[in-house]
Image (cartoon, rainbow, N blue to C red; front, side, top):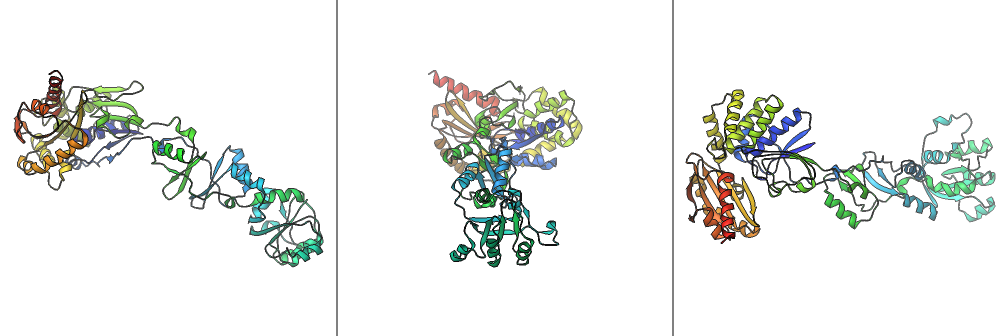
Length: 548
């Protein structure tokens, strides 16, 4: 999937171009999804509602996540699987760590090869907690059935008790009193011991060496609901291997296992792998649902997310973690910034008034039909960014694009533009921070950081009514972020100029930007475009100061 998004504090051109370009890419068979990097402003919401388009999802970061890694997905086993089956399964599939899940596929524990090896080496387990099916399947055994009984009708049953390997004479067993209802007896063809086991109503009798028993013992045992199983191995081998018939849950680790979820970033993974020196780590979905197993090899060559940038090409204006993504294309109409790539990409950069103009021309070049709702987005983005052709950044290409798009839409452009700008200029119910940051960008010239926020308004009085709170917010912002010149530009499209509030540590630079006009809220005729008019003045002012 390709992520397509504009800059932080998205404006209408950024939002509309991302959606329109995503539609174009999907039409070409490239799965693409548009995103925004911040709250959608009033103007953009008006546009989306007018053309009945759902707003893009918010993208907080584009860092490599566990979901991007090609981790292993070994099949899990249930907690009642035998240890021996688990071992064979791990060997056949070259698995070193086995996930254990319940019936709902929720992870309840893990088992490693080391766990199984230590269990077998220690051989201190004198208890059995398993099922008759586990014993028979693990050690190739069968039930010894009573007369007239079909073996296929015997149901699996749970077995839990103490193991007794019979090596004593039956009279000694009576004296020791070690045979009881909790006993699981492992015995050869010692009939007296078997009879003693039946008398004491043991849990299970395991006959070794494939020996036959007189039918009377078998019938008597089953009358008391005591199953008898026959195993082909000798008594020594059965005694050594019977503990491997235990449920895998008896040795699984259920403690605080380091585990990851699909949204965890590569940084999260590396940090936890430094703290917890495991070989494999479970990957879980919400609700502890098992998804796979992750190890250190998987993070060596991660798959990066594919992204297309629209309306910007600077790291400082883009999403967090962009350095970890694969930029495959850029469509922009601003100066070339600091974004770099490891391989050649398609970089579409044109001196036009709107990114939407470029996207419109991409549709034409590829001969892809533009549906009315997408045409509405493209037209709106161009009108917004060119301030309905009043911005000095406006080109003939912008005007032609709007003319052609309106053939599809048949709008009254004057009426639509006025409604759009009016919706966008409303600050009702917005916080000071939201008003300032709705279209705020930071720039760096010769290691001098400058911030410019721009808002278009048809109601200047409502903005000036909150001038003092705005200046207080700007004062804290520039001090906290080391900004030498911070401007809040309130552009009146009808008057074709802007009112400017300012703060910053570099008063000389501010004077040069504003042509010595240092009265808060002064109107500067002709200042409409941040890109075409303000940024060149900022760059020139810094150059002059550096050469003083």
